[in-house]
Image (cartoon, rainbow, N blue to C red; front, side):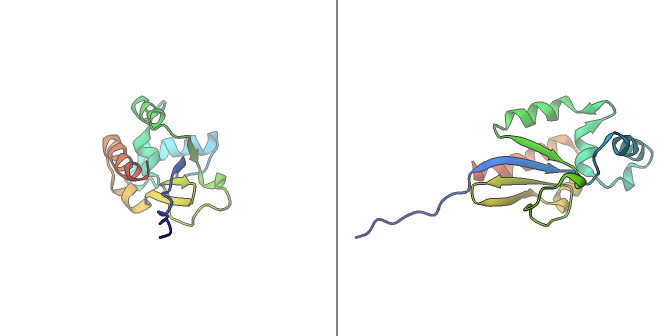
Length: 129
């Protein structure tokens, strides 16, 4: 009887976080003002949750480094060709078989704390590990 081959499991090669914002110092300053003055209309929940007034939150930075995968943060004007068409902000895994959305924009926009974001990401990465 021929040996039965199991389908290859997707293996995470990189985690991409895509902000719903443009890159650059001027855009960063405008975003900081926007999320301070009118947080309810600020369009990037990922930025809102992971950044404070002085930069990336230390707890988030430690968590990202603990994931054990290369991590890339992208802005709307830095998107690489080949990324799946989706809404932003979101988290995407680049795997050996393609891309998998880990946290959709809809889910990201429902999150309210850094703890919720880290828990959501951990739940999604675990099955791919």
